[in-house]
Length: 425
Image 1: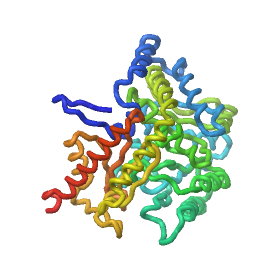
Image 2: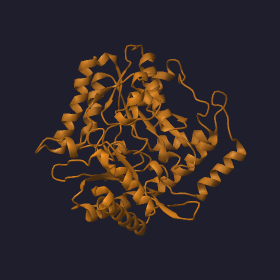
Image 3: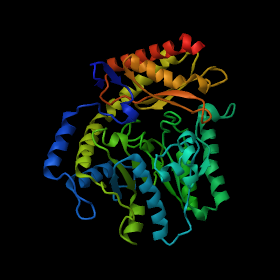
Image 4: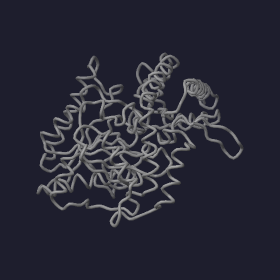
């Protein structure tokens, strides 16, 4: 779990970079799998040849996927952004193959993040990351974020709140005309933009019902929250709703190789197979044999660790609530599995965020690293500009004592920042 710099200083990696290194560093079984594949076949272009490693990885992912994916298909690319580009193109191709060429619009949620390429940015709601590129984008229709802590009405039950937020999809479909919409895109558990926000009960079941009624596809973006991070191989499996397309990355290769996947359920695959018979998209490194071998070894490790993630996740939640539950500047503690966030606020009762001028996130990141702790800090969760949160995504190999070290060090870093003379000024 530790990284060492040039001076030999140790840092405990409590976020896996950006929730990537879910198995820590220097896993010998993954390194061995990469070596074996490199000696067997380092590269082939998938317009000519397939590879055993990509076929076996696709089979393993489909075995773990939600109902309806068993005889589906998987495309392997090199990043989460590429996976989302494939998903958007697939959704469009699906409708064209069935003679419904008018469907070209996408609906997603405010404060979402789906990648950094132009198509992925277009369907994202991360204002800071997309602002400079706005003239180049074909923006999606954004509906409200699903963020109970900040957005629920007084006395509103989480389930009632979830139904109200899901109804915004219905409203957006009416505005655009349901016959013009290709798909709805959402993260089952919100990632870095809001900080591991789980959905309220029933939200995605209602989303699925609305999508079916309108004839649109549901794309589940599991790039950050999937691959065991939330305690199940796929986070959407805990919501009682089956998407049509799933994107995954980050933990898929556990950081040992750049790899991502776009998975389609059987009904979508059959439409394309019975039409053109091929994916209308390609990248040079699709299905890279060594990357797939690394991911296959990583997913095998993750399979065995899922019970540990669930147990350790509950342990982490208890520790966070014990240490920060009554903290004057921690407004919310949220998450699932080994994916947890503390939201920092200036005033807990009013949920007022710290002024962006104070750069709380940046200072906390620096202070934590000074103390030997790597955590993922972000800002803008309150209104797009203000609102600081710290995200924890420790490796699945974490021990109870290492959780102690993470929480204790983070607590010290937060106190040092909030009580510093520089901060007060």
